[in-house]
Amino acid sequence: MLRPLLLAATLMLPAAAQAQGVAGPYLAARIAGYSNDYDAAARYYDDLLAADQATPQVLENAVIIYAVMGDFDRANDAAERLRASDLPSQFGDAARLVTFLRDGDMVQASDMLDDPTVGGALLNGLLRGWVAAAEGDIPGAEAALDDLAGRRGFETIARQQQAYIRAMAGNFQGAQEILSGDAFGPLNLTTRSAFAHAQVLIELDRRDDALQLLASANAAGNSPMLQDLAGRIAADEAISWDFITAPVQGMAESYFTLAAILAGETSPTFTLLNARAATALQPDHVDALILVGELLESQGQYDLASDVLAQVPRDDPSFFGAEITRAEILLADGRDDASVEVLRALTRSHPDEQAVWTAYGDVLRRLERFELSADAYDRAIAMIEEDTPRDWFLYYARGISRERTGTWDPAEADFRRALELNPDQPLVLNYLGYGLVEQRIKLDEALGMIERAVEARPEDGYITDSLGWVLYRLGRYDEAIAPMERAVELRPLDPIINDHLGDVYWTVDRKLEAEFQWRRALSLDPEEVDETRIRKKLDVGLDAVLEEEGGKGGIEAAEE
Image 1 (cartoon, rainbow, N blue to C red):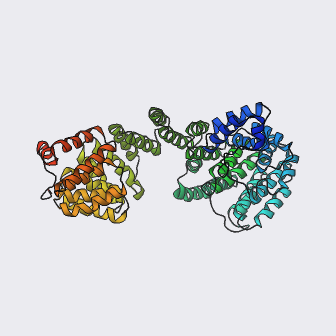
Image 2: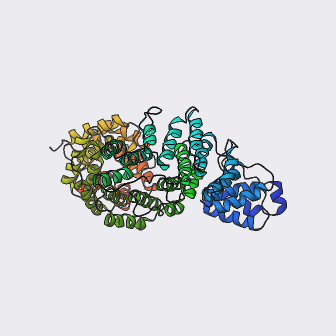
Image 3: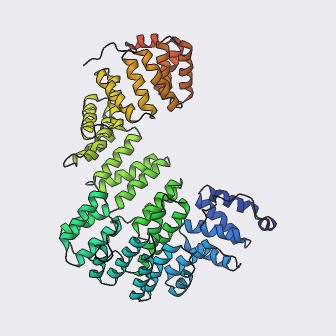
């Protein structure tokens, strides 16, 4: 069984490494690898291997790091040195296998596939089929996949790739028999198998059937890859089978399939190794590139993730989706302006893609550039032909942007439209209810909305805070205490919620507790305007602050 990279290992240095005086670089490499800083780890392993003092353990870890970086040449070099030590290494063998497949050495690859531990039953079974196809033995390829399909849990994947082999060989009717379910029963549909199936139908001059298949698949998954193919078919473009035209692409598909299955189920590093193998065999395998980028992002490797996603071709249907993800990565890395620029460029290159304007609005809103985000959401909403329940978020997001720019009436209209599309959405109920409270209007309705939101999400501190705050605004001070205290329990580090609890305590004449909450709120780094107001409350008390502001904490009656 493959062990996760470095996760279970200690940082104790082997005695051989200590004796050779390589402790510093080795520990640095291990620490970098443990923290998923693959670029730094690779540099340390470079130094260790250049010094010609690498132990087998150093070599094995180097293989893993190089493979995770996508550099299978260096991984193979380390694997060959490791092999010379006569110590078994599953990772080393896996790296060598990828190199043999990439370089077309099917004899060596076939020999390695006889060892079931190299890739595991599923991967080895798939690769046996494609290796046979690479050797021109299509019947042997089908026999290998027949054998794999007989193993429990592998039938659908084996049959899909058997269909791909038939299509690659020009046997489109045979591929259709598998993909339609006529040959071996129904197969689970994936985005990629739907794409392949549609191309097979086109080759069989069944364009209408291909369009119907894609319409069903797009309704379920909304894939740019499938939408683009459907558009090309509708435009009567000449389309031919190009999903897998060479066995090495089928090998890449095998590694990608395994990585997609493993994603979220095992070590991200192990998943990453297989996804990198797919891109090593087929550098333009877009779905594999995107998966690699997402895995690196999940491990905090933002620069590496951004570099990988930048490799998605500009003319690929998934390009704008990859760029949206890259913008999210740049934002997570604190590179706000770079993130905005990526999306701004997309609005110029893909102005008719609603997802682009939505993503642009989302990033601008998160950066509190609310006027610009409202404009972006305007463009996205204008592209809606007929509202559907899933469009609630666009109206909700635009409502937030409008509210934050001080235009309440249009914001309220957006929130109410979002609720029409998704009546029980707690985020909308809370935001609209809280907004009505702050506007000091329709407070009874606001209370009902927030109570519904709390019922739907009782563990959400922000929504519970809203309930306490509307009760406070209604002058029901004693009733406000319990939800406000619960909100602080749920979100103890939020300065505004602590500040709100202080106001409630002050109003029920629990002055010392109020001052304690305000001081706690100050310690939690509130925004400057809130900090100034809290300090003033500590100096002169809440009553004086409210009198100076021309209002008071509670509202005796809701203004309708």
